[in-house]
Amino acid sequence: MSLNWENLVVGYAGREPLNRPFSGVLEDGGIYAVVGPNGSGKSTLLKTWLGLLKPQSGGVNLNGRPVLSQQGHLTYVPQTHKVNRYFQISVIDFVMQGFGPKPPPHSEALQLVRESLVQWELSADADKSFHLLSGGQKTRALVARAILSKPKMIFLDEPLANLDQCCQEKLMNTLHVLAHKQNICVVMVDHHFEPYEKLLSAKFIFERSHNQEICSVRFEPKDDTCCRTH
Amino acid sequence: MLQNSLIDLSALSAFFETEFARISLLCTLLTGGLCGFLSPTIVLKQRAYVGDTLAHLVFPGLVAGYFTATVLSAPLWLALMIGAVVTGLVGTILVEKIERTLLLPPDSAAVVTLTGFFAAGVVAVSKMRGTRIDLERFLFGDVLTLTIFDAIILAGVLVAVAVVILLLKVDWDAWLSDAEFALVMGFRVQLIERIFPVLVTAAVLTGLFAVGGLMMSALLALPAVLVPPKSSFSLKTIFLSIGLSVAGLAVAFIVDWPVGSSIVLLGFILVLTKAVVLSVWNRKVANKI
Image (cartoon, one colour):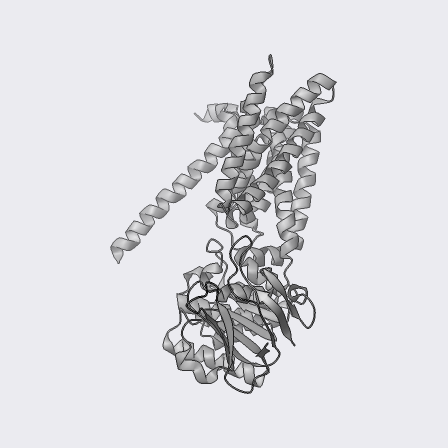
């Protein structure tokens, strides 16, 4: 599994670009943090990697092909407010969406979802509306949904924001296990990775020099990782 | 009192022995079913304004159709249908373009466009001497004048909508709850985003000719407002929509009101009742705490 990007510049159509061109590849398991100040383009980069946004210039591909043409390999944990607040979907149906459009037979799928809810301490809320959960519970449901399909790469947008310290540790440890035991590539946007620096494989740091209006993205490896930038 | 009721019932029974009454009941049932299928998606996707928007967008098309039919001696129903479809589609595309280009909320783009189109229709009518467009029929329809042809068209659109909703149910649900996640996971989001406006346009245009724009707009929203659905397909919403339509037809017959406005008023009263009951209930719960 290889996510490549060449001379990538991200940003919204008709607006200023958010970064200077940079290239790189993500190939192997590990936890990759994307950090930087507010509005620097972290979440925009995440969505561009996922194929949800078109790059302003450059290109992204997964195994040499467009990202969105290869569903099933990647998954996404958005911020909790991205879930439609008018849709009173139950937690169990919400997590079930993690199987994608072709789920296993219903009884098997239900069993797997129930096991996942137990793992994420949500089994008591299985039939509750997703929107009646607390912020931390919502994040756990989002993560449970994302990892249900056993993806090769997981992209998370500020998953630590709503979690207390205990849940943050549990999430980071789970992601660490996924990254190193199952060789899954975990890419996370967040603001505070300080307590979890040891678990990270590398960082993508958005930084702006005094004379620069646009951020540069600096790659900072933490271990002998397969990720690199040029 | 009992005698009066019996008289009313026998009158009602005699009324539904006539062909036009049976067709009007059939069309009301079909319209109710059609709106019941689409209501969850329209309300959950916050597109309740779409029905009203389309009802106004087609107005200049109806005027143009009327003018064309008069000048060219073309069949009126065909000219009206073509005019409505053309301005409906052009208007829908314009709403989307204005929304994306000016970075406006979708309802603002819709309101700006619908009022512009409606104003254009009013100006056109004012310039056509001797022409009178029946606005009341356009807004509330006249279910008692429908033919079996209207019923067949309504049934066709209902079947198409039902098939698309049921076949793509998991995709609709994923799109409704979190469109970006759905796209990443391979749900058929792009297909749904293309189909959705087509289904709504077809439903509103069909309903517009059958029962009026305002009723279609209201009926598309009311069922899911009254019973919030937990999926894009909800039997409760469908039955409620059909029940509301039939009850509105009955009220219209009993008190001699226009059918479209009776259904809309009945639905609005139910929404108000629900709001009052919930408000009292919430206050009681708050006081207990």
